[in-house]
Image 1 (cartoon, helix red, strand yellow):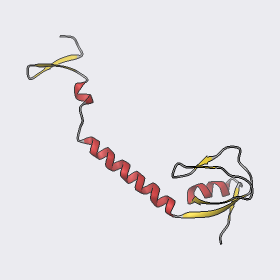
Image 2 (cartoon, helix red, strand yellow; image 1 turned 135 degrees about the horizontal axis):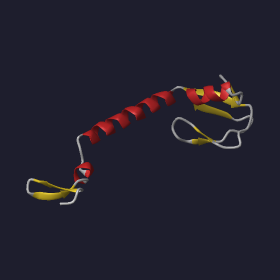
Image 3 (tube, rainbow, N blue to C red; image 1 turned 30 degrees about the horizontal axis):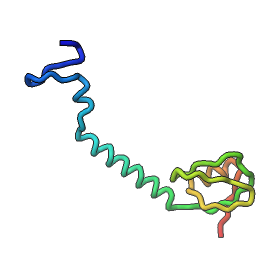
Image 4 (cartoon, rainbow, N blue to C red; image 1 turned 180 degrees about the horizontal axis):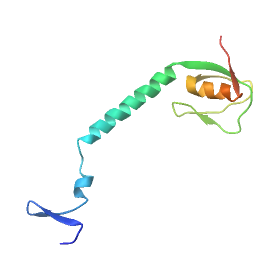
Length: 97
């Protein structure tokens, strides 16, 4: 028998067969993805209003994965992390109501 074949209970199987078989860990991965998605939603719940001071040549991707085009004078509601990065970089300022 070749090195990539093995005999299990009188049946010859390819060695990769067990790697490709579904496992109980798949549900754990889904649960972890759900937790990550919930954390992203929690972060996006605290939106910050910012006024753009300098146009950016390319759109940015916010925490929800949406592209946002930033032009001088625009006012956007962005997640706190994105807003903080833009303010720290001098591209925006907080525009509280």
